[in-house]
Amino acid sequence: MDLIDIPAIDFASPFVLLLLLLIPIWWLWRRGRRAPAIIFSRADVLARGHRGGAFTRRLLGTLRILLLAGLIVALARPRSGAHTENVDSEGINIVVAIDLSSSMLSEDFQPQNRLEVAKDKVKQFILGRKSDRIGLVAFAGEALTQVPLTVDYPVLLAAVDNLQAGQLEDGTAIGTAIATAANRLRGAPGHSRVLILLTDGENNRGAIDPRTAAQAAAAVGVKIYTIGAGTIGMAPVPVGRGLMGMRYEYRPVEIDEALLRDVATSTGGRYFRAVDAAALQRIYQQIDQLEQEPVRAHQYVRYTEEYHWPLAVALIAIALEALLGVWRGPLP
Image 1 (cartoon, rainbow, N blue to C red):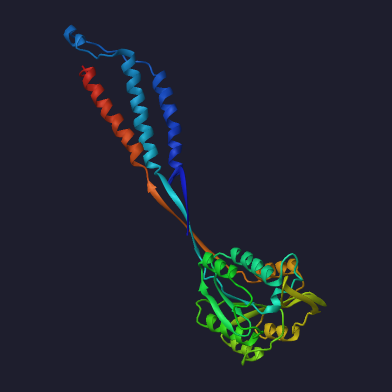
Image 2 (tube, rainbow, N blue to C red):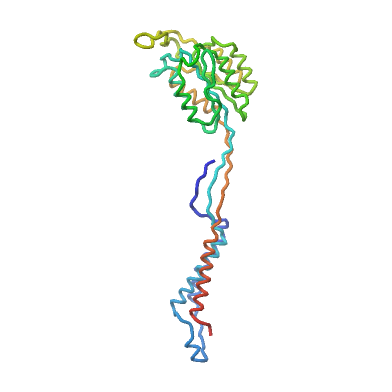
């Protein structure tokens, strides 16, 4: 809920303010009116007559103008308020599953390896969401939930930063990753449940068949977007450590695109191929556009009535006029 203070004053009945136009008309009429003659039958009454002269008459006219203006403005009901927008949105439940197998250290997504680029693009995707619950699953030869569904994005971003190849047993268990993510999404509130799975290899570990896992995910309303990360052809793949650090060899990039495509289409999702960092960026932008939850916004205004201020001016004008009448003396 966003609260925006509005310092300006508005009026519940603004058309009443048109009566203010009568005040200068009344003032001109009063000024042009011929002063009536006063006949005194006794000198002592004249001696006790009104005091103050022209100044008193002008002050009396000013007080009556303030009285009329205050009453008219009070009748127009001035008010101040806070404009409040209450945004009612269920949000989308999203689990991001990232491959941490050793092949994700391949350096075909220059200037970084696949994993570092994937982490960077996932963080940008997270920062672009607002009311969605997002979870994080890491997988290699096994799959583990790093962060359950949450709207605590700082915690989620920190968990993405901490992902490293070698944290899990090596391999690529795509079916296990799908089952783990679907289990997290199964009981999530709302109607939208999305899994974004990024991998750079072929399913070679785990006891769960990816297609079977995808069918089970579709049965609980999970839509899967799959991303195959890796260039076309050969890529420098880590093969071990030597005296100078990690050793790389150029090897063919092998991604089971048919499997990833079947997994995605069987759940109503899509398969994407990311051949470099820019392509991966565009893919996450496309998914971001595809998965937008309509937001239902209700606006209301909470007002504070301010009529008592002009009414107070009118009452003060009445009181001052009464005091002025006493000071001027009784009428003959």
